[in-house]
Image (cartoon, rainbow, N blue to C red; front, side):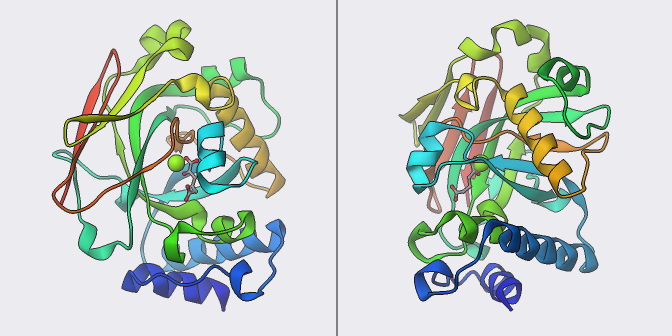
Length: 251
Ligand code: OOG
Ligand code: MG
């Protein structure tokens, strides 16, 4: 029932009140069950799972949405925008963008792993943009609401420069987000639990708690480095670091 409402809100691009705000109390376990039901629905409609995302790994994001612990969501292959990057807003509710670091794995990971082990499993680390689109009115929700809503997952864009080549300096890399040419956010990959690898370790642990693993080839979004920025049709967004630059047109 809850999954159905979220599925319809996404399909019709019509926001619904959060469940907590209308007195439907979910705990985190139930919220992940709802998320898994949504995943099953997506898979049975022909979508393919391509990886996972972390949410709320940075203080900026925790403050942004008013909740305080990392959570996970799933990513479907058709949510990745391909070059030239254009976000179709007609099918979305109130999209926002946030800069992230993303990994592509060359080996699977399961259970409790160290950051060093996690690094060995990484094929590529890239600058990325996540587009989030909460299915809840005014982007207002409690932790369990947003978990049920697959952590607001909508679309994502991956850079092509492999940051592993300069990984020792990842924590001090600067990331700039501009909207229509104006600088709106600055951040660093250290925002995600100190290092994006710590976020990857946390994800593997969270997944293991659900009896799941990360498979070779999986994409992982490690969490917003800054607060998210609302976008409207006609805007253009650029995310930039020393190594890479991505431009997203809001269409
Ligand atoms: C929740 C999703 C959080 C992140 O990177 O922290 C997230 C939201 O902000 O709606 O994707
Ligand atoms: Mg995110």
